[in-house]
Structures are given as C-alpha cells and as structure tokens.
Image 1 (cartoon, rainbow, N blue to C red):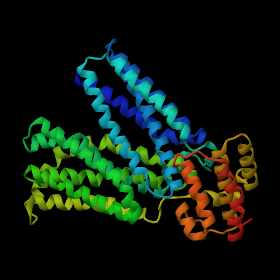
Image 2 (image 1 turned 60 degrees about the horizontal axis):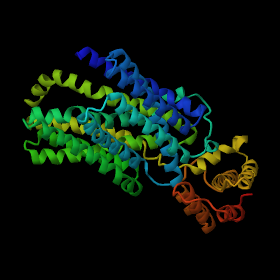
Image 3 (image 1 turned 60 degrees about the vertical axis):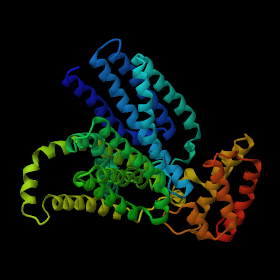
Image 4 (image 1 turned 120 degrees about the vertical axis):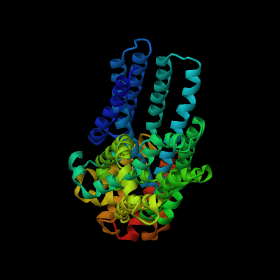
Length: 474
C-alpha cells in the first residue's frame, strides 16, 4: 500500500467521526441515548466488517475506505450518546463517576490490542476477525442499553442542537477539552517516536513508554472521582494542567530515562481528567446535554485528530525561533520550555476556573423547569406511576413517583432556584430523613442494580406526602 492509499484510509475514519459527532445531539433529542448507542454500534460494526472485506479478500482500497468511513460515523454518534448517558447516571448518583467510564475506554483500547496481536499471529482472515469483534460489540450494546435511563426522563431541548455552538460556556469547555486532548494526542502520536529518536532507545522501550502513559491515564481516571468530589472541578483541573505541563517538560528535558519515565507517568496523570470532566460539565443541564456534549466532543476529537499532526508541522518550523529566544533568556532552552509549558497550563487552568461554579448534579433543575412544562405535571406522573405499578414495572413506578415529588418540591419553591443540586445536597438542604431514605432506595435500584420491590413503591407512595408536608409542598 502506498502513502496515498494509507492517507485515504486514515482520512476516511476522521471524516466519518467529524460528521457523526456534531449530528449526535439532534439524533439523541429525536430518539434517546440508548437508541443512538445501538444504531451507532451497528453502523460501526458493519463498517468494520466492510473494511475487513475490502482490505482482505477484495483488496480494494475504496471499499475499505467506505467501511472505515461508516465506522467513523458510528463511533462518533455512539461516543456522544454514551457520554450523555454517563452524565445522566453521574447526575443521579450525586457524585463524580464519568472519569471511570473513560478509564474503561482506556482498558478497552489495551484489550483490543491484546486481542489483535494473537489474531494477526494466527493469520485469522480480517473479515472474520473484525466481524467477530463487531458482532460482540453489537450484542454487548443491546444488553447494556437495557439498563439506560428510560426515555420518559429525557427533557426536550427548547432549541436546536446547533445553537449550542453559540454558547460561551460550552465553547469555553470545548477550549479546555481541546487543551487536554492535544496533550493526550501528542503522547499517542509522538511519545514513542520521541523516546526512540530523542534518547536513542530501542523500539520496545519507546513502545513501553507509551504503555506507561496509557496506564497512568487509566489510574488517573479510576482515582479521579475521589479527588473531584473532595476538591471540585476547577482546583482539580488546575492541578491536572500543572501535572501535564510538568510531565511534558520532564520528558523533553529529563536527560536520563529515570527522570523521563517519571515525566511520562506525571504527564499521563495530568492529561487523564480533562476530557471526562469536560463531558460532565457540558451535560450539567440535562435539557441541553446532548447538544452541548456533541459540541464539546466535536472540538475535543477534532483536536485529538488534528492537534498532533499540527504539533509536528510546528516543530519543523519553530526550531530556529526557539534557538534565537533561548540565546537571549537566562536559563537558555530549559527556561523557554518552562515558559511555554506555563502558558499552556495557564490557558487550560483559566478555562477550568470558568467551570468552578458549574458543579455536576441536576435533579432539582429538571424539576424547576417543569413548572412551565405541562408534560411533567406531577399528577400525570403519579397516575403513570400507578399504572406502571399495576403492570408490575416497579422500577419505572419508583422513578416516576420520585420525579413527581421533585416537581412538587420545585413548584412549592421548597428548594432554591435555579441552582443545580445533587440528591446529596438535597438531603442536606431538606434535613429530612424520610427524603434521605427515598433517595437511597432510588439510587440502590437505578444505579446499584438492586431489583425494585413492592415495599420500595409503597414507601415512595406513603413517604413523599410526608416529605412534601414538611417542606411546605403539596
């Protein structure tokens, strides 16, 4: 395969993704996140199979490119829908969890490589290999989306998804995510090569360096929710940007492999939280979450795809200016890199500060808006809850009755508006053990995997009037 054919294949995925990402918000509003995940997974899996046929038996680059284009579209819409659903789960839990979903993505990438190596070694035909992987993904998506939050809880957006591109806060989140995805993408594309060429190490050492970076990112994403819940988004993103800048400088200026290895780990930890926190921040308002996550994802993945090649292009052209500057600044080249790293860190952290007031969790905000939405009348919700209970759909009945109670609290102005509160904040605000028990039951059923019981529904039916009476609602 010549360079032109390889470029066409890589471009096909990128173009498909860039087309799929901005359209995902409108698709989610038209259907729901679960349906979009299933559709995107099916599109991506069929695209993989077509790419395998084109690259294998047919040996036709255009066929393979068409398959990869479909894969790009499918993975793009699939990705946005998963992040929207993840933000909804996070909002309901009242605590950070999005980084752990992204840690699972990192593990998936490592697992894919672990499967691909023996498949290639065994000379498994490409259509068989990719077809099996795609089929497994479809089966898992069909099963996994059964646990997604029901469509009844989605609130229609008042305007089209395109308007999210004009919102200053959404664009600010996009800039922050852009900075972090460039930091991540630079390592993906350049770290191994930088170690091999810059430090004259063996190829396997360069690959090991990249693996260490991915592992550090995964650890950062698994442990990140604890830090986020303790200190909040803005301080954590300040710290993350500092770690990413320091780690990058250690890799560039370390001089020996021990310092460089430490820099790789620090770099990975620093780059780990920007993207998932950006997804959570974009989805703070559930009524506009799909459109905003679509915008931020488009900016982020665009930076992920275009950022590293742009860095390579810049690297070929700024060597002389950097040398000139290093000769005129005390500290020389090291000082120049420290200044550049500090500037990048400052940009990311400045945007992070803009997010400080937008802490996740929004059960009340949805209810507050419902005062002007007749489709969320509490009596209607309670009637639907009763009908669901009669049909034996106990989890749905529990959800609807909880939703009706929140609507009544908001209409009675028993909670401040328009603040976005988590269930945990609501418990502290209301000071009601009765509400704490109802919220705990809902979390255990919806997010903890426990089956709803008749006792849960009965507790909700008798408990909510007591909560509302104490809060002054009706």
